[in-house]
Length: 379
Ligand code: UD1
Ligand code: UDP
Image (cartoon, rainbow, N blue to C red; front, side):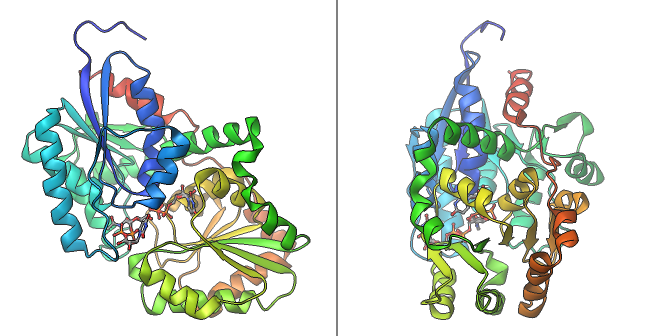
């Protein structure tokens, strides 16, 4: 690592939700370990509890915390609060560059506030595109907005790099780095190996469901609110009618999700609806599960890396790499389709084995280091 020639460059890393925190803590750690940078962290706290779970395990103490989360916040109110709050922090910090990740409201407004101040903004997990502005909603547009302003585009794969080139982004500004989620997953796996108690909190459930085949479930997408979530709940009910399975479902705290799941699934003997798990415990669930059933973005990346078949409850995905690798399959939100696909994986061994192969289309676990090297070329 070269010695700093002058004052370290002040970089403001902005994030606010659980997945951003998981995917940026490796970058924050790499920046903080490099004397060329003076890394400052601003969390919007668009998520509160789920964000704090990641900050705790990663040992990050933010320099700024906007604490914007309100119950069931609308996109309008959230966007307005984020833009003004993040702008104020940028005025105070005067960073040389701003780093955002992914496609949340925090990432989009963080990029916009930086652009308004003509501060270069660098985008981690750039170039994901589904081609449909309502799936995922509003993330597809958030990513595109960030892509029009970003200085450096850190694309996780060649596919995402190609999507940016197709939008006429300067190829010299696009770098294929892998996805930092794999860095995070490797890190947490090492931590659990050193200290198994970090993921020991599922022991009671593991005992309760001993001998059953575990299916991990997550669901939170806005475009599935209403009918989509009801159909997902109905599918879980029908899967749970089998004696040989148990479903472990950490339920997203969004009230739109809770209402539906509490109404449809409470009291089922082999469905455990639990609070969101911290990252080590979620990694434990990934290793216990025979199948993951999810509409999450991050889980679509982690499951293939671990060789876990993942059924994706969406009509389309901006992460086609898992599908191409054969570990992920789009199943939509029709309950009969979901049940049929799960039963096929449970009952047809060759079909299961065809999906259960570890692939690493999303990275090798060294993405954060590459990103920090590339940032170093800009200062
Ligand atoms: C947000 C992101 C989405 C991302 C997801 C990851 C936007 C518009 N959406 O969706 O892209 O995939 O996070 O999970 O940026 N809540 C809590 N505690 C928490 C977190 C949320 O109670 O720790 C509840 C609050 O009532 C909050 C609601 O969930 O108002 C919705 O949170 P919000 O961040 O607006 O949307 P998500 O659906 O979580
Ligand atoms: N995750 C977690 N605890 C949970 C559920 C998920 O730590 O109870 C992690 C998961 O490993 C992944 C990320 O949260 O890294 C995905 O977040 P989410 O599904 O909320 O958002 P998305 O990826 O869809 O934007």
